[in-house]
Image 1 (cartoon, rainbow over the protein chains, first blue to last red):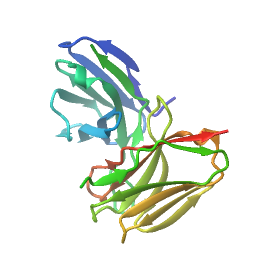
Image 2 (image 1 turned 45 degrees about the horizontal axis):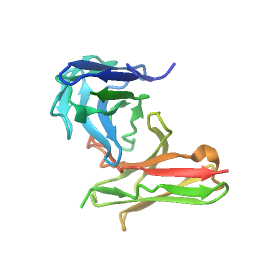
Image 3 (image 1 turned 120 degrees about the vertical axis):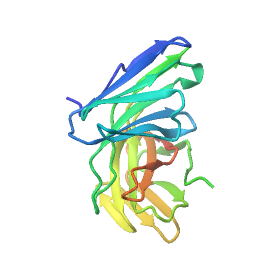
Image 4 (image 1 turned 180 degrees about the vertical axis):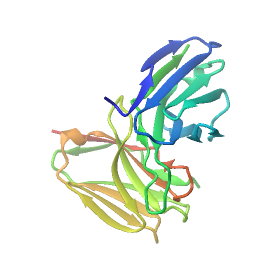
Length: 116
Length: 111
């Protein structure tokens, strides 16, 4: 079984609809992240969470919200979807940073979202 | 100046060629350097990780970091069609949570 799973894998929705993307992990990591990936723009950080009670905005949080339901679960919501939120969305996890360790992040398979 | 610059390609090479992928960066606080590989319709996966300057080799892959020039490279020897993917460089300052990614280079290895 995959360590980081995302549901749904594909989603088509209409402008103005609220949708939720879900992420679960079995790696036991405290840190979780949501990114979006667009052609020519690379990966951009939307939100990140260092633990259940710690949630932070990334570089492009407008129009998004998140919920960290448990250590293993981190959900991303689009409050009122718009066409320019059409993108590939990735969840990622990482372990607590310690001196000498890396900031390695482990990615889920992605959710392809189309907003009409 | 963007923090991390990476030529998006695309780069097309024949099977067996040596491939060189590169990134430059501007933030001198970066200490951890990574290369991720992303196959089409998949999530990025960690390929190589290097701390500070120097070289690291893993099979056909070699990662190099030159902090004095703020330049990192990934070399692929004897490239295979299965190496066809997008390669993203990433780096961080350690205690800083944030991984800064390059935009990725699309590589195609032709049989």
